[in-house]
View 1 (cartoon, rainbow, N blue to C red):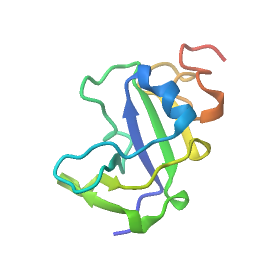
View 2: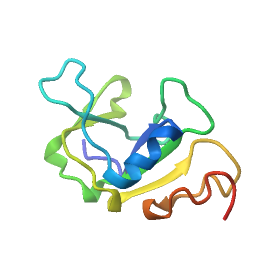
View 3: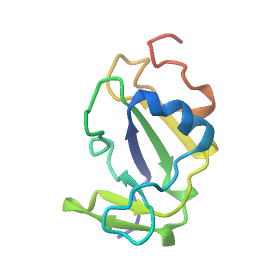
View 4: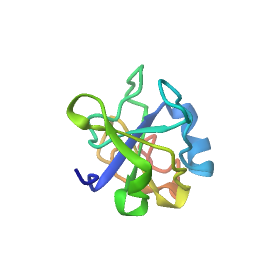
Length: 119
């Protein structure tokens, strides 16, 4: 099955600044030989363990990824695991829940614009 147009990654707000500077890096190791990055093929599937309104969701267009480094996992095949580092310039962000300003997708170089509702 081809990759969806976007892959999504949710993180607590406290981690977002580092991601905007360093990108997304493979770190999970559960049951795998190498660290991997876990992302969702759907916006609804991008959740954190604590799932807070203030969580930050990052997305990347799949055309910017090496499909050979990604595989589908999990129920419904909505989880994607990859060993690729995703550079910040390919990321967009928004807040998990909030008003229309907070949930608007923005280029990562604008972070933290819009997170608190300010333009």
